Length: 336
Image 1 (cartoon, rainbow, N blue to C red):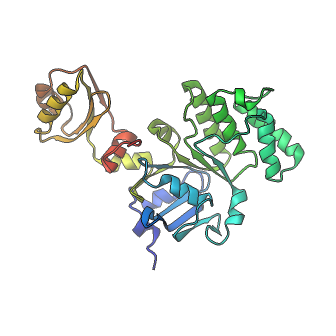
Image 2 (image 1 turned 90 degrees about the vertical axis):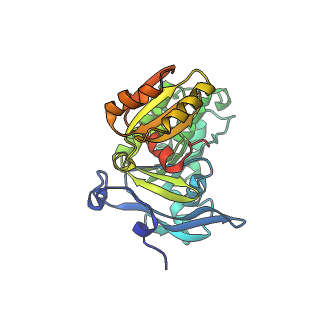
């Protein structure tokens, strides 16, 4: 017999009643139960269970190879699960996938556009594929292109910048007004201005009641946009909750970032810090940077840490972040 969602998923949140009082809806539009997928005996997804509220933005995070993409490909009906099932708006992923397809939109990580066509023609073509009314296609295409600042362009999409192609791909996934939108790295390759435009667009979209499933390598993006976050590793969900709930449960303590001028200085500092009792975790990052979590606040910092570490290029004291939580839970970065 399958385990319940609560038994199977390692959920981190403080109050189950509060969790169910989602600000968007108490209705679950996606319910995943013991979903598994194996390839040649290798478990890519190892029995995950989760629920997504209608109208929320749900982020699925994890290192490369954690099982995120396989999970999304199952939920979007591309892959058939090895075991388990999911219900998407009460339709079974196993038995009723043809009823699920019209409900979802997918913006994949790699842009899928017709480069010989204009932006307008690309979007209208997808609308016709979904059997939409021609007048509705025209009206909705114009509105979406204007929101993404790519309306009125008569040149073929092959002349577009990478950022413009990314925004066009997002619009194409939305033309048929899906109830659930799957976004895979929606702001990848965008400059800061275009990224903020996409974020604002996603926030506005969420306010219309669309449910959004986001996978991203950008921790700030997940932090800014998410209502709930699930972290996957080795095919399992290892943590789940709001950002605040994850922070409360991480017990990382205070966070220090040291940057050193050389790898040699970093190693020397690391060897000294690991002998301090109140230093709980040391994580080595790129560019000769160490992230240290410790207890005891300013007293520990001044009396113990600075006494040992006298030579460094930069020092930053900050609050626990989503990246810190992620590193603690998985022991590796998103791109490892």
